Length: 118
Image 1: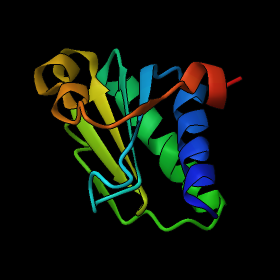
Image 2 (image 1 turned 30 degrees about the horizontal axis):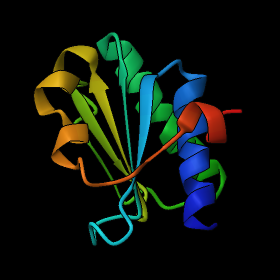
Image 3 (image 1 turned 90 degrees about the vertical axis):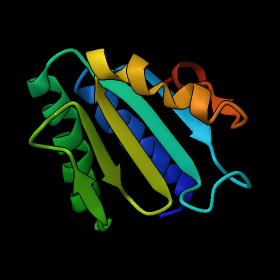
């Protein structure tokens, strides 16, 4: 599966569990960690876990190796490492504190709601 297809799969999985304010950062040429960062949030611990679990389940169903899943039990910031795509699922209360969008402000964003979820 190509990186863009993997990113789309993760975005759709997050959207299926009603993740809010989904942002995709194109990290090509900016970070050697991944090609895409996906940032989103849920409004409760249970929703954060449901979003992360759905991303993991969709990856497994498509034979994609989940390299790491961190922070699941605490549910304030769950990191789902899919290799070329890294998903950050925050609890609403934590997202503004870490503000990854500002930290990686030089990365172009993709129009999730116009291009990916259309």
